[in-house]
Structure formats: C-alpha cells, structure tokens
Image (cartoon, rainbow, N blue to C red; front, side, top):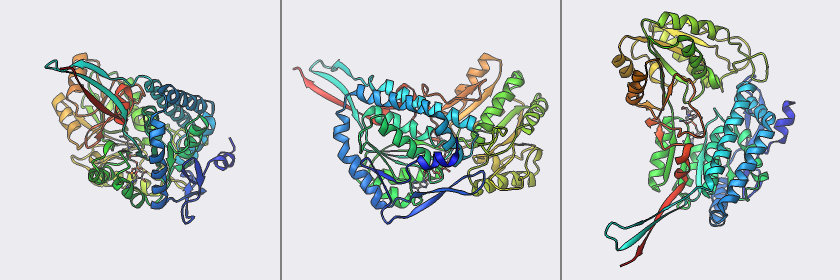
Amino acid sequence: MPRLDVIARVEKGVLTGGQWRPAEGGATFPVEDPASGRALCEVADATAADARAALDTAGAAQAGWAAVPPVRRARILRRAHDLLIERTAEFAALITLEMGKSLTESRAEVLYGANYLRWFGEEAVRIDGTWKVSEDGTARVLVTHQPVGPCLLITPWNAPLAMPARKIGPAVAAGCTMIVKPAPQTPLTTAALAALLSEAGLPDGVLNVIPTTQAAAVTEPLLRDGRLRKLSFTGSTPVGRLLLSQAAGGVLRTSMELGGNAPFIVFEDADLDAAVDGAMTAKLRNIGEACIAANRFHVHAGVVDAFTDKLVTRMSSVALGAGTDPTAALGPLIDERQRRRVAGLVDEAVAAGATIRAGGRLPDGPGYFYPPTVLTGIPAGARITREEIFGPVAAIQTFTTEDEALHAANDTEFGLVGYVYTRDLNRALRVSERLETGMVGLNRGYVSDPSAPFGGMKQSGVGREGGNTGIDEYLEQKYLAIDMA
Ligand code: NAD
C-alpha cells in the first residue's frame, strides 16, 4: 500500500455535526512516523471552542439518536465491522505508519477492533429490563434502560483503532452520542474510523472528533459542562486520577482503563516451552506498549535458568525494524521520550546490580527503536518492578514458595492482569483467586477478547469494556413504581 495514498485519504480536521473542518484559529500539529522520526502530515489542533461545538452537536443529536430503533444501531455497527474487515490492509497501514508496530500486528488490531463493533452490534438488540411484584405486593417494579447521554471518550496511542472501537461500539449500541479525543500521536486511524462509521450509516452529530495537543485545556471545560454525562478514559493512571477528580465536579459516570504492572508467574511444574511462548506474546505484543504487557516475571528458582535461557534465545532472534518492513518483527517505540524512559529504567536496574542477558543497547540510526531485552538479578524494589515499562524489556525475579510469588505479584498499586503458568489445577485456581487483578491468563499469554470483560482492580481502573456487561457502562437503569394497591 503506497503510504502517501493512505495518509492522503484520511480526514485531518475536527469533526463536528458531520462536517470535517479546520480547528478554530487554523492551528495544526504534526503526526510523526516513529520508525523515522519524520512528519507524516499535519492535523487540526482543536481548541476549547471546537470541543464546545462538538458538545453542542452531540447534545443536540442525543434525543433523536436515542429514539433510533436498536436494530438500526445494530446494522450500522455490523456494516462498520464488515467495511473494516474489507479495508484491513488500508487501516493496518495507517496504524503502522503512525504508531510503529508491524503490519502483521496492525492487521490483528483491525480484526480485534472490528470484533468490538460486531459484538456490541449484537448487544444493541438485547438491552432488556425486568418486571416484578414489589415486596409488599402493592406495586409492580418495572426496570428499563436508557442511554447515559453524551459521552467524552479519551483514548491512548498504543492501539489507535481498538481503543476507540472498544468505546464507540458500546456507546453506539446503547444510543449515546459522543466526542472522541484521540491521542495526539495517533489521530489518523481514529479519523479514518469515524469516516467509516459515517459511511456505515451513523447519523451526523452522533460521533464528533477533536484531535488536539492541548488535552487538558480542551477536555476540562467539557467535564464541567452539565450536558456531558459520561467520561470513558483509557490511558495512564496519573492522568486517570486527574480526570476522575475533574469528573467528580459534575458527578459524571466514569469508566477508567488505566495502567498495569502485570506479574507473569512461572511455577516449577509449568510447561516451560508453553510459558516461553506465552512470555513472548505477553511481553512483545504491541512492542511491549500494552497495559496488559507482562511487566514482572516471577520464576520459580528451580526452573529460572532453563526459562531464562529459552527466553533469551527467543528474544535475541527477534528482528527489529520499521513496521512496514516485512522482514522485521518488532517496530519502534512511540517517541523519543518513551525510548528514554525505557532505557532509563534498564540503566537504573543495571546500576543497582541487574544483569543484561539480551539487548539493552540502543541501536544506531533514525527512529525510536529499543531492542528486546532480558534482565536478571533485579534488585528488590527496583523502579522497573514498580512502574509500567511500556517497552520490550523482560525483568526476571525468582521465588521459592507460592506465598512468596503471590506476595510479590500483589505488591503493586496496579491490578489489571496476571499470568500464571502451572500444570497443577488446584494451584492454578488458588493463585488466580488470590491475584488482585481484574483478569488472569492461565497458561495463556493473551487475554484480550471482545466477549470478555476487560478491566482492572485497584489503580488499574473502574469498569469493564466488552463482554455481556460492557454495554451497561453506557446505560442508565430506570425504575417505574406502578401502583397496584
Ligand atoms: P496518557 O494518560 O498520557 O494519555 C492518554 C490520553 O489522555 C491521550 O489521549 C492524552 O492526550 C490524554 N490526556 C493526557 N493528559 C490529559 C489531561 N490532563 N486531560 C485530558 N486528557 C489528557 O497515556 P498514553 O501514554 O497515551 O497511553 C499509555 C497508557 O495507557 C499506559 O499507562 C497504559 O497502561 C494505558 N492503557 C491502558 C489500557 C487499559 O485498557 N487498561 C489500554 C491501553 C493503554
């Protein structure tokens, strides 16, 4: 796919009321190719006035959209799913160009994101309620659902198609209007998705898009505006905390998908080859830039040498290169700031006594590449075990007892996902129950699935995306008390 063609076809403005237009004042910002550091194009830099215009149209469209029959909302989502699948190559090229991951991974993201649209299309026609006799028999209790109302959806750069799709899908299915604020590193895929939804039949004004580099100045007034009813955010825990405090002013419904610090526990009875396969997926998927990436490897002392040797061999054979290069398996990190952060975490661990078993050295040349890296002998309490690495670095620690492994795994403020490798069924269930995480990968390095509730405990977030309760995040319950006395 010729890259300039793909970029040239994408809308680069602000979308309000079905119209793509320049930002108020005409400012733009560059979108970079992380494999070269070069600018791909300029995109409108929305202001607070643009955000207000987006809320004006989302607010005006809400009542009409809520009245659209569920089956029509379902058909729009199904059509959008089908169009996305048809255009997988084009969307994958866009994701790779602005985010950096390989075309193979980008194609998988298109399928994953499309499946959320299909899943929530199927849910749109299953919004139901209940009817019962009140406790004392004097009333009938009718419970129904209605859309929450206009939503602000703020998304990160690491999955520029799947993250908006996971929010837009249920919002459309529930009958909510919305304003999407993509990450400034990756606004192009979101713009292409919005245009595709419009082509699939989504009425003007239901979905509005405000790319911006001034996130705080643009979203804070929206959170104070009484017409907004919900905030759904995916991003880092510090920004999530700030947004929660701002949303408290308007007592907004919130869904928060925040950071992770996933433990990957390998017991002495694990199938080590399966554990290494799982580790490669949980560590290198999305170049390690995933909230569900394995962040801390806890390996039983009896198998740590064998596990590490196998992992080092596999990690060392991964080819680094631009996502558009079919011979490369691992693309660049998103930007220089992120590369410096990852290098800083590794250097600090090494200075404190850790050993580099693979990678660990910045390659020469352009782009924000960081090699697959394996560290052992991680000192207790090292920053690399406390913070989300968001890069292709496996930090290995050892344990000897189950309690010790669990204590280490739960010793974090995060609680998104944990991975457990063991062939002992009782232990698998025992450890899964005691892990303080919203999701557990049991002998599996991959948990993402539209049919499952994705989300975390502790400071990894509030609420779930996907599964058969995902749509509830965008619905209000209403109860009618019907007098029968
Ligand atoms: P980030 O928190 O810096 O930014 C996320 C989004 O919030 C971006 O659109 C950004 O522009 C916006 N933002 C930043 N500051 C803001 C402010 N003051 N007000 C309003 N909006 C603001 O995160 P990031 O670096 O883009 O993404 C990486 C983070 O996202 C990681 O911590 C990762 O774990 C998390 N993440 C979580 C999930 C999940 O489902 N739990 C999924 C993907 C990524």
